[in-house]
Length: 232
Image (cartoon, rainbow, N blue to C red):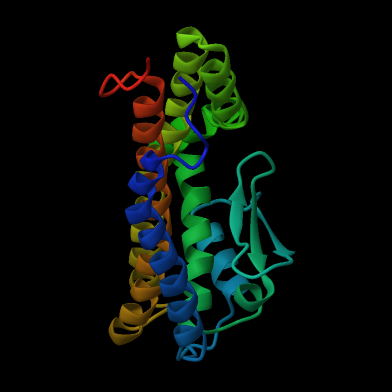
C-alpha cells in the first residue's frame, strides 16, 4: 500500500518541530543579549581561545576567522578552531563562551575523548544514511519491497545514533569551557552565569536535533510496518 508523503505519521514530528523552533529562538535571543555585556577583562574570543589552547599545550591548533553568524566550529581534520567575526573580535560574555566551547572540542580531540572519536568516525556512514534513507524507503513503498524499506530505516538509525552521541560531546565541551573560563580567571563568578546561559541555549539546539531524528525514526518504523504492523 502506498502512503503519501504527508501522511498522518507526520503528526509525530510536531513536538520536535516545536522544540526546534524554540531552541533556535532561544539561542539567537540569548546570544544577542549576552553579546551586549562585555567581560571585565576585555579580552577577545580569539585571544581567550589562544591562551586556553596554549595553556593546554595545543600550540599547533590554529585559530581562523570564518564568515557567518554562529558558524563557529572546531575542525579535527586540520586541527583548527574557526570563529565567526563577532566571536573572534568580540569581548562579550557570549563571545568568550562560544570561543572556549570550540576550544573545548580541540581539547577533547587531543585527549582522545571517546564520544568525540565515535562521532567523527561515523560521519561518513551518517552522511551516506542521511542521503539514502528516505529515497530507499520511498522506492520500497512504491515497489512493495520490505527489504528496501527496512534498509532505508536501518540507514537512518545511523543518523539517530550520530545525533545522540553528539549530546555528550557538546555538553562536555560546554562544561570544560565554563570550568576553564572561571578557573583561569577569564570571567568572574557573576559573569560566568551569563556565559552558561548562552552555552545552555546552544545545547538545546542539539537536544532538538536528536529529538527530531528520533521522531523521524519512529515515523519511518511505522510507515515501513516495522512498528505497529501498518505495512500491508
